[in-house]
Amino acid sequence: MTLEPAYSQHLGGRNGFAFLRLPTNAPQAALGGSNLSLINSNVNLFTANPALLNTAMHKHASFNFVPYYTGVNYSTLTYAHKFNKAGRWGVALQYLDYGSFEETDATGAVVGSFQANDFVVTTAHARSIGPYTVGMNVKLAGSTIAEYNAYGLLLDMGGVFKHPEHDLTIGLLIKNAGFAFKSYTPGNNLGMPFDVQVGTSFKPEFMPLRFSFTAHHLHTFDIAYDDPAYNTIIDQNGNQVIEKISFTDKLFRHFVFGTEILLSKAFQLQAGYNHLVRQEMKLENRMAGAGLSFGASLQIKAFQMAYSRAYHHAAGGVSYLTLISNFGALIKKKESK
Image (cartoon, rainbow, N blue to C red; front, side):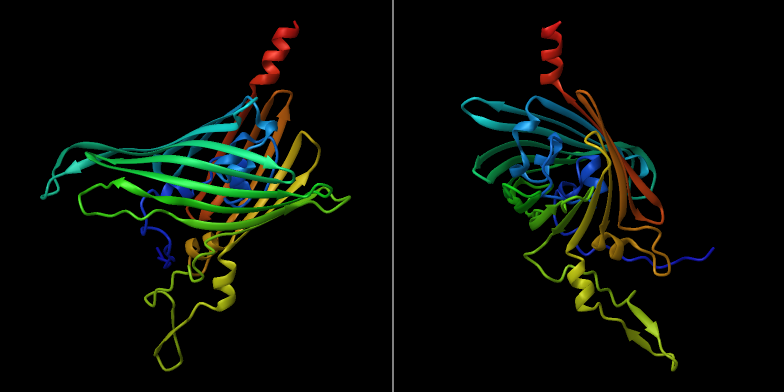
């Protein structure tokens, strides 16, 4: 068997609550895993940008399920409501169950088992003034590994401009600004997965396509993993030559590209590309689809269903399933009978 060196993640392992970077729903995952400018009735969108919370989500609820790698299960519940005086609000619960692990002593003998899980509870609020919408997510995050616990308080602050005449939206987001008020162990200060993003979604006139471009980690330019142990080649004289990551590669690691194919109002296809995922998770001689994602969304009356497949590395991809119900339409239908 031939072993191929793989690239590791520059951003991973440096912050607590890193699971907050995961997409919560199938359409978001299909568009490359990050999108803060797409406006529609998908109630999950406010988890990506609170300014995307809109009136079309009123009384919509969603369940999202992701059978992640190696037995990890990831699920999200969301709900949005518009009040006459208080405006638009949303709530979400994300939960990751890492399963059960064997607990061993210093000699390697099994002495029991322990559990590990992460969660975040989100409250969202948004208000619009003309073509502009601003919103905020307040998030309580928690993480448990055996008897060790950590808790943090985080904020997302977003804004969206929607062109009054053209199908054009521009979004700005400050994500996961906050602090940990309890760490796993005393003196272990956890950093937050802070991010600054900007993005746009637009549909060319007379074309059944909508394009999205998202730029992330704008507060730090160099987010590339540059390990000399891997980024080396041997020249003709047998000497090691370190291959430096180019400026262009470093630049494009900040971008996520997404496309929607609008077959009808009820049925859409999505595709996305995430250059950072591709460069960090590829094998040295094989890309294996890393960074690519695909999906489809279907609406049947008061229900929406979406499925996506996101490919991270040669080990395979991850499937996302999203179910959305418009309880407002269901209640009206029952009342009219």
